Length: 190
Image 1 (tube, rainbow, N blue to C red):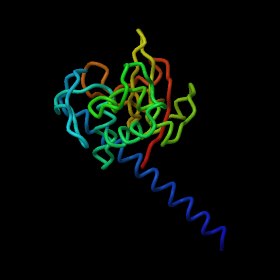
Image 2: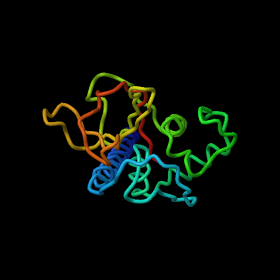
Image 3: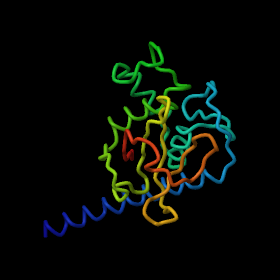
Image 4: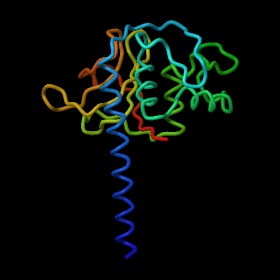
């Protein structure tokens, strides 16, 4: 009987996780239907649930908006952790305290947050290890960082899932998982 309940518990946890991943993937796909211009401008955002204008954004905004569609406010969650644990976050911007307008829109900060509160998954060269709902970060040329969401649509050759991201052409779906050096691989569900 205990074995039966253990299996039932595992199956229910697995199904719940898959449902969340599917919802996050679908939210990221739906974002690509909106016309968004790449715009890294610093905006004064209301807190919590502050967002840049709907027709503007960067790569982090894809992640933030997809999670918001599921009722998770990364602006609030990142800020609250940074307020308590500022020393754990990167100092490359010269700030002395958290800034609710920009902290959640910086890839290195999201990497720290997902490492602290999500599941850190292995970085591999095997496309099968990257599933819908995963968050992936990359290093781009010129020391730029990038982030996107793995979605439940496959590449033309059927070998990889596509990525929902914004690298300059707005929120798009693209076969780009291995286009740059992967620096992080996460799953986050609150």
